[in-house]
Length: 83
Image (cartoon, rainbow, N blue to C red):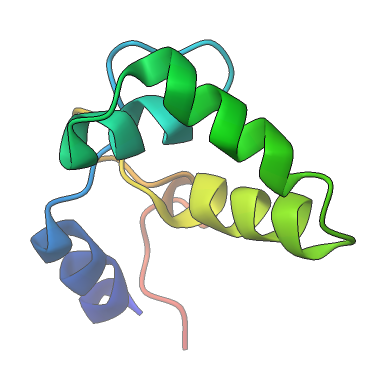
């Protein structure tokens, strides 16, 4: 399972330092070059999609590394390999 987390880190996407809730919109804004407030509006608009918007945000929140490379799902398992 640690190889999964390592491969997620290699993608290079991080939660943005300019965050309000989970930092996903800040990270997306940093990667795409879009203004962070516009990206926040896009993310909020995605919440209008039944289940998909909020579900995708939660999955991204669980699997996206913070600026220090820590991943919430990996921390929930104590950083150990899951088998």
